[in-house]
Image (cartoon, rainbow, N blue to C red; front, top):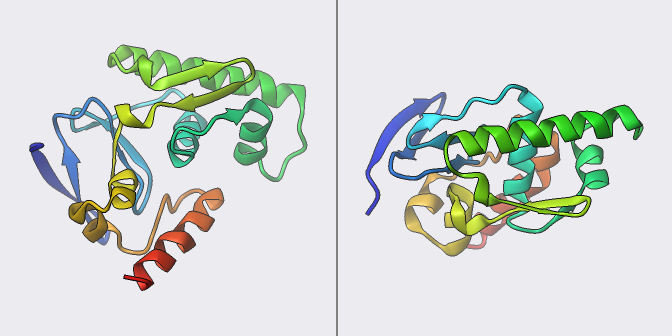
Length: 161
């Protein structure tokens, strides 16, 4: 059993897994923790990139798909692709600092995460873990517009139970 501590975040009380190298909170606002402490990135878009990869649950995303999601209202440019490379470097550097660089699966012009190397509330929800099911209060990665579809999916699945 994992040692957890309760943290009040607005209307949510979340259980942070203090023994997990990486714990992703996707219910409410997205947050990522390493051994119970929030992970800090050099750029806020890096955190959003990681959130998107966690949302994909191991499915690969091409660089073009990532650019379309992270900059949804902007045209595709070479400047975006350069910035995406900087975000990927920031992500790799931050994960390497905590010894979790192995969660990234890099292929030619695409990237994914290894979901089995992350403890995540939404992954637990999908597996039917009661603590995770009870933790869901109707919001999923609230700060990201691209996650709205998942919120609807979680709400629909709750209504069926």
